[in-house]
Image (tube, rainbow, N blue to C red):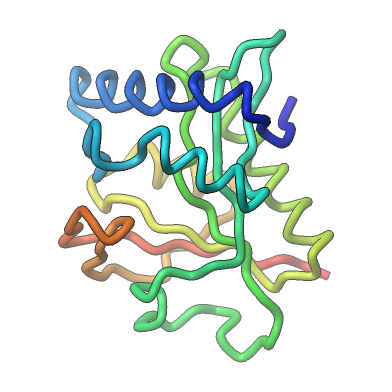
Length: 175
């Protein structure tokens, strides 16, 4: 089940970030994350303090994590979003990840469904995100969950990691 993270989850989330980075590196996936740079324990702690950090709890174990907020990085401004003319906010997905031991059983899809419900409850026009354009597994996951590719652009991840070709995606909230 998806729930708000607590301070007791921070250590597990930081470990989760590192496990996902290690797993992706060992299996040839393309992520923009760098261990010890982004995301880190501070990433999770900062999101917790803003009340935007969520976890997927599997019988007391943090099996996934995501940050959901309405703060669009400046990289998003250069794109032509489907809902650009809508004055309502968009929920932005950051650092969506699932523990390698729990991959393939629908946790990411459940977290995306949670994000959709959150966006509806906040009366947002859409959900937006960016992922590495070579991370085909993530792109396929998002497309299967109704997201569309808006475009590609260079991005600066958390102000620290240059990403030369990010794939920007959007899910439009239907009324």
